[in-house]
Amino acid sequence: MLPWERLATADAPDGKPLELRRRGHEYRIRAGGQELMSNEDEPSSRSLSELGCAHITPGPEVRVLVGGLGMGFTLRAALDLVGKGNVEVAELVPAVVEWNEGPLGPLAGHPLRDPRTVLYLGDVRDRIRAASGDFDAILLDVDNGPIALAHAKNDALYGRRGIAQCWDALKPGGVLGVWSLLDDQRYTTRLRQQGFDARAQKVFGSRKDRGREHVIWVAQKSQRSRKPRR
Ligand SMILES: C[S@@+](CC[C@H](N)C(=O)[O-])C[C@H]1O[C@@H](n2cnc3c(N)ncnc32)[C@H](O)[C@@H]1O
Image (cartoon, rainbow, N blue to C red):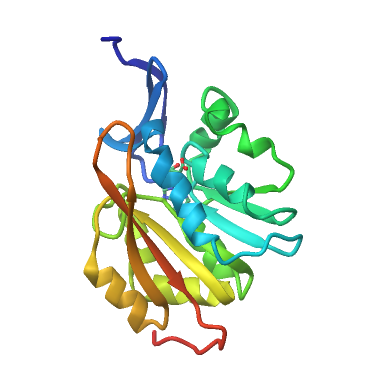
């Protein structure tokens, strides 16, 4: 078996060490010694966009927010679904952007080079907080999910306040899509309590872990923009 090769290292803004590794055609990003993602996870990363954008009619006015970039699969799949619309991708770690401009770029067909891509270098929470009825879909894959965090601060995205901020940032009828390694019934309940029509869907997870399923929440904001409880 081929050995793992370390291609690059960097620090996340919270000081956590990041590492990009390759073994043959397999690439992995690790955060603090824990696997954050692999290109073997491409199927469920694409499913996040396919499920989260299923309600969208492609067109120039469509706007989708993706957080974060990772290896670009969710971004690529969203670009494939918006027609002449645009997809904003928020990425916290500058090195991840550099790696996508370098060795990771070909994996998802260089989505950062697409003129419909808008890159926001920073925390996706800041983009969500700054938005008001802007997005047709918000697709979150910034961590391992609501109960398996790699970055502690991401906890705030999955709580009541974070959910309410996503609601405000979506257009009426817009969808919040969330990727997770594991199911979490309490998160489904919180989404529903905050007014979303929400379901957790199991999807084919990873090529390396045969049979393993990942979870995608599809949470739709009603057409009538009722304010959720905070
Ligand atoms: C699991 S990867 C995303 C994989 C992605 N779905 C794909 O298709 O490759 C998570 C990414 O989110 C980034 N990230 C983590 N927390 C973030 C935040 N609060 N805002 C923006 N990006 C964040 C990480 O640096 C990493 O690049």
